[in-house]
Image 1 (spheres, helix red, strand yellow):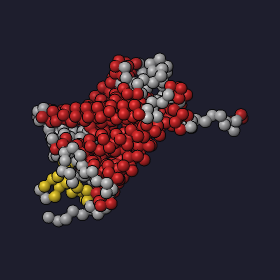
Image 2 (cartoon, one colour):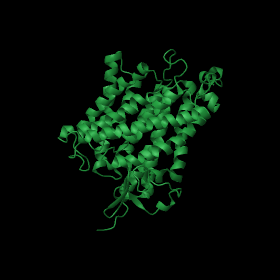
Image 3 (cartoon, helix red, strand yellow):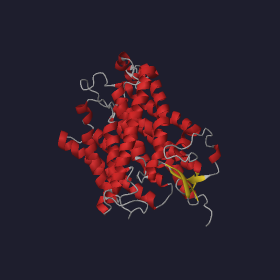
Image 4 (cartoon, helix red, strand yellow):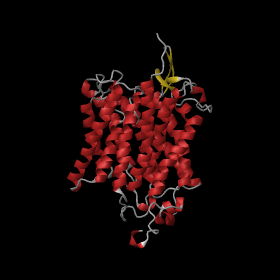
Length: 432
């Protein structure tokens, strides 16, 4: 058998996809930033941007090895190596098989997933978190929660001949998650719920108006997320191939379906089609199709999108009934959407579109695949929720996690960053 050599086309696609996924975090910053009040927009955006700095550094030091190392041959974690990535420069990517791309290209691609996952959590605690405490939380959370969970779901092991070592225990049990429905969205959504409980409700929640201060920013952020998500999903094929094409078209049509599903619910329930609803529907569809994008046919992707858009539009109202202040609906969109997409594989999964996939209920596969998907959902959700509760409580009881009430009322932009997003005092009369 000939030796595997680097494919320029596959490598270019993975590197381009890595850049697209990185763009999603500034897109998320705009999306979240537009949804908060003007006195909190800079803090909201900084909570996303600091994730880029912290996670990138930790990824090089130990994060990649903890998530994808195989030396320990453990189903729960990779290797506790502090060697950085220097020893991988001349290696090919090996994750259940050898890919014709450099290992560092694979590491860069996976880094972008690690960056955006804690950033997603920040939307649940908008307007009231200390920035330094948030930064500490990000560093601890990715180490204790994300890196191990990424190993459980995404690590298919180091293959040498017929031997494979270091397979994550959910991947080894057949849980299908092509691009992060469990490892990213359910993980972040469960953590968001835990932090929202720990920090409590914002002052004036459900009494004072807390409307988005800039819907154009929200729409711009949603557009950048949609654009970057093609790298998120189609890039997970790790090559410019047929599976990338399937993931790409499914990402598009599912998102379109979710947009329509969300605003249709709004029209029936509230009598209006809103731009915020359209943007939220876009994100709900992107979330839901993420785990399923390479395992279902395009018609099924449309159905998944429609269902996710409608159910997430209904789910965001749960916070008012249950009394938790999830500021920007991370739970209603990411946790619920991630669950919908992960379980949908058990119904719509088709080996006809992907020979590596399994048939779901609608293709005669019975309930076996659905049971595996449910297992992944429950384990990741429970681990993330309870681990985050512990981390959040430790921070709250030591250095404090929530800002003082007077600083919350005046705005965390001024108290945490000594800046404001919109400086109007310098405008002179006469339009100068």
